Image (cartoon, helix red, strand yellow):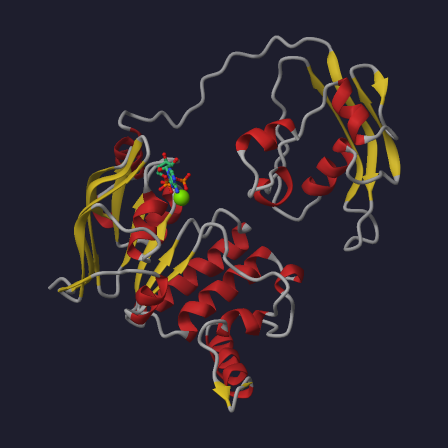
Length: 361
Ligand SMILES: Nc1ncnc2c1ncn2[C@@H]1O[C@H](COP(=O)(O)OP(=O)(O)OP(=O)(O)O)[C@@H](O)[C@H]1O
Ligand SMILES: [Mg+2]
């Protein structure tokens, strides 16, 4: 027999100016299941989850918790209903410790003073139980993205949340961390927690989820059992046509060399021997060159060196025929180099400024 529904989102419509982000979407989450939400960029996944977490109010539709209609006015209300969310962009206080972040909002206070001992003990028990290896006193800004995510997960567990929403949790993780997260999700589901898991990686969904709901352009395309579907069917539901997993490409006719990197070495405080060591490559006009690697293997430092954000310890860079090894950021930009940073929220934009201000800056 199928488990009863923990959460039912029925005929939810949420509009933003000029767009219907969620168009009459129904999503039913069973107790103890891992339910994946699949869809391309902009399909409406985060919006739907934000509605469930009380960040947005839908124009139409109802939400039921354990069969009873609820009105989720704000995230605190969601929390009281046992709903927790790990956001796509983490919501942590960078200058607070792991422990402070976990208890923030549900602190125990004794005679006006913060009572940390009990909280610390509970946090450590939870951390040990799931093998998180958290350092409760480390500052968020000093720990890895994987640890930041575990802090977010512990925030939910510390609040005894029963419904756990993970918004694209694997996008920021290394393959090993993804494997660990999948195991964590499976054991949480086994304990009876109900999990909503957003992803557009079909392999992960096939491995971890029990059922999948597919969204496309704000509409629900369908819900299927993972055991009865295939990657081909899911990708077809997601994009609306057959997807060819084989790439057909002609060799590219490229022009002259525009970027030449010779024996580049960049040191950093974490890597005594250099985060980038002796790297050489070139880029020709009209081509796209991909640099592959897991986060933390020197890609960021390589980009910092190319763009002039960090000095090189050795090597030489040539851009459009000019030596830019020691050139300023501005000069590199004038010669024709642009940079879209990996974390646009942190390094590319001033989020409080308008588009206009950001453009002219
Ligand atoms: N606060 C907002 N104001 C206006 N439009 C929004 C807002 N949030 C989302 N949208 C729009 O609603 C649509 C759905 O966005 P949403 O973030 O839910 O997509 P998503 O499926 O989570 O995509 P992704 O995979 O990129 O995270 C998009 O067209 C987006 O631009
Ligand atoms: Mg999203």
